[in-house]
Image: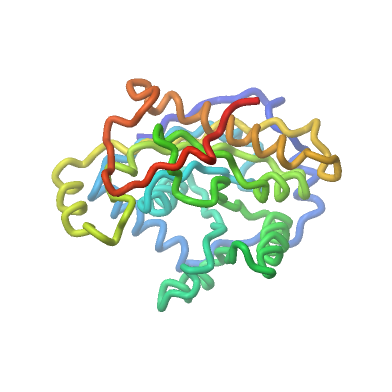
Length: 274
């Protein structure tokens, strides 16, 4: 199910036409990635019922855009690939370097144009440069600001890393908060452990998985060279993801109904509004 929302033409935080005037030639998603998205859509349909709400203003399409999503399950990337395909977007995903080192998967990730992030290494800055160039080429870049599958006991977004904010502020690119709910009921946190049983259960139950692409985050008053701007922008982005998520779980305001016994709990990075 796709629900199309309308926003006023004044919403957003940058001059999209100006960005495109100064961009490199527009990037086109490789056939491999478009095919993979189509496959993801079929896979999600087998395991769950996908509902997508799209509130991205038409004037911001096709890009450049930064999609900032919450992270609740190993199933998230497949869900988001399917949801993006549903609304006609082929994002370049900033993903952990471990995926790129995996046989076959790594080669496919590179050919699809995704961006490798080796966190905690001296080459991490290279990923930012690649992402900035991707946005300059008109791409949509998908980032998980939390940097990991969230361990908040309520499954609300955790305090974000500042990379996504610095990326957006550097280019003045619109940031779209993306919230998803339900993927944690499909695959367990410790996947691939317990995968066959989880898949069999998902095929039978076909839980509803909801994805909502929200309204752009207003970062217009923040300059990239201002001390503390990246942190403030990050907090606004996480707040926006939280606000976008709330309508997807109205009957689960505090704790999720489904509790995964294999998921650890860590409150050290819980996000609190300022």
